[in-house]
Every structure is written in structure tokens, then in C-alpha cells.
Image 1: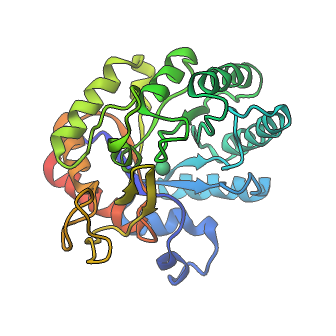
Image 2: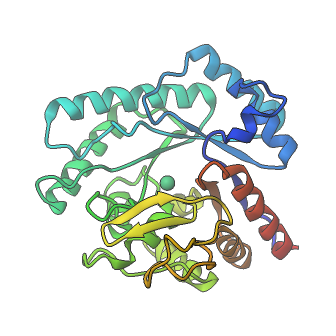
Length: 306
Ligand SMILES: [Zn+2]
């Protein structure tokens, strides 16, 4: 099976700033090349503030060191909002992010769909209508928006909702966060399916379901996030460190016993990817250990691909 997946971190862990790259993020591609990783998800989660000249430097460095880019858009971009002024600001922020993506050469922008205020179905409709408007007017060639599955049950973004968005807005592609889907297992919404992602076959079943509900172009551009994660009945509570075990304080009948691993386990997903050969860009969002999470996945993947 030929390798068909790329791996990298969500932004920069402490270890980057302690490295010889001297806190300068445009050296990220060189650092990742040294580590043996493939991609970097740039975090514009507090707004697209990167200067255009810095964006151009990322592009040059990415080309030199063979590193691809994606961008995580601002948390304050809420296209599902009931408030027209919030939607207008969100359009402006997303348009600026897309301009930077075009300069950087980042074909993928990850976006949280946002609130379900006023009711899930109407919020989903608002998101779809606003996204259709955005892609018709403001999306540069070669850039796609990837709405992400949400870890909090009350946020828009069950897997079914993300697949519905992609059906209604064909230029969108999913960002499937398995940590978030793992957190939704206690959800009683009929758009949730109770998948736990505690063994490799869970991923294969889920990916087959996605593949069956997407166009070939969308499937080719699949984007994934993964991190071990703590949750309650409401969903996501906290991203945990790569390889971390559950402590006595956090143990409970739902998440597991002390000494058990936090799920999902990134290497299990990497094995499922290797087994299927499915296309993927995979971003580790493990807490301050996303470089280690990405490397562990790449190693598990290459071992199985052979
Ligand atoms: Zn995520």
C-alpha cells in the first residue's frame, strides 16, 4: 500500500520555542522537516493577524522544506449566528483568512460551524445559506473551507451535520475531529451515532460512512484532527497530552480506570489509515505535545504501510 496520508501538528508546542529555531514561527517548516513531519496547521484562532509579508515567508519556507499548510480560522467566525452584525464580521474575518491562505499556499481552512442558538435545524440552515454566499463571493481558487465536527454537544457539528453541510455546499470538505466525535458518544441527538473510537475498526466503519456520503473530490481532501480528550455528558472538557494515562482523580465509569489511556489513541487511527490506504491530512491537537502525537502517528502508519 502506498503512503497516502500526511501528518503534522496544530500550531507550535513549547518544544519548538525551546529549540534552536528561536521563537520565529516562520522557521516552523524547517523544524518539521527535521522532525520528519509533513504539514503544519497554522492557528489563526484569534483572528487572521498574520502580515502578508510573513505569509509569503511561510510559503517560501514550506516550499523549501517540503511542508504543506492548513489554517485554523478564528473562533469568532460564527456563520450560524442569529446576529447579522456577527455574521458580517465573520464574513470579513473569513475572507481575510482566505486571502492569507492563498498567499501561504494553504488549500485548507478549518472552521467551527458555531452556535445552535435558536434551534439546531435553523442554525444549520443559516450556516449553509451563509456559507453558500461566502464561497460564491469570497473564496480564492484552490482554497476550501473545512467545517469541523464539534466536541460540545450543544455546538453545531455532529458528523451528520458536517456531512449535510458538505452535501449542500459541494466546495466544502469535512474536518473530522475524532477527539470531538469520541466526546459525543453520550449525546442523545439523533444526528449522533454513539461511536466511541476506542479501537481501529471504529475508524474504518466511520471513514466508510463518510466516503459513501461525499463526492470523490471531497473524499480526496479529507482532513482530520485527533487528540486524547476528556469529556462529560455535555461533551468535550479538555484536550489531554499525547500518551497520557487517566489519573486517580479523573477516573470514572465512563472515561475509564486510573492507568487506562485517554482515548482516542492517535496510533490506532494511523493504523486504520494504513490498512485502508484512504487519503488524509492528519493534524494532532494533543495538548502541548502535537509534534509527538503527529510523529507517533506517522511512525505507526509507515510501520504498517511497509
Ligand atoms: Zn479540532
